[in-house]
Image (cartoon, rainbow, N blue to C red; front, side, top):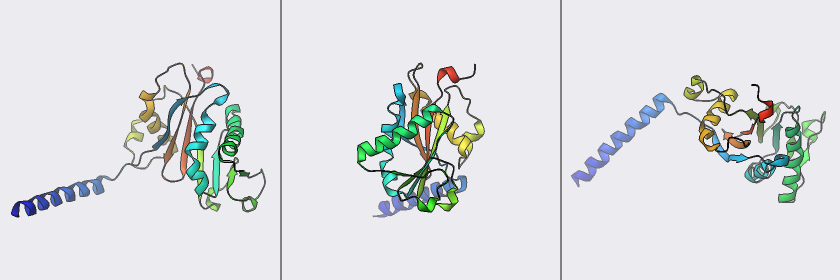
Length: 197
């Protein structure tokens, strides 16, 4: 019986020491992968399908989905159309889209927003950010040591985590990472002809 008490005592001391070390150093929060790196096919396939299927729980549980897409990019505009069609095709539900100049309060929920909006006015929302990336981007050392990441560091840390999964050098990839509870980052590889030499 004494051995059991000794074992519990020692394990309690070890666990206490580990907890103190974790509390003192802090916990590093990293992005969570949701869609693994996948090759982009013609007509921007299968980005919209993967996105609709993987984000379905968030689409169902939130009132607003803010899409921070690149309005200058034709692929971004294509994704906007495709994601709406894909969602309606898969789940047989219509999505309300906030029109330019329309007050947020007048958009029936669930409401998807494809324009700039003040997030502080919203409750119960998720945000999807379009992030372009290139395979040959140096990762700053400062980003690897941060406990809570800013938007720039999320890109570099995410790229570092998937670097070995980009197996086909001639293919373009996309992937999705989640950071905290409401931020999703859709990473789209820059086409080769648009990469500065």
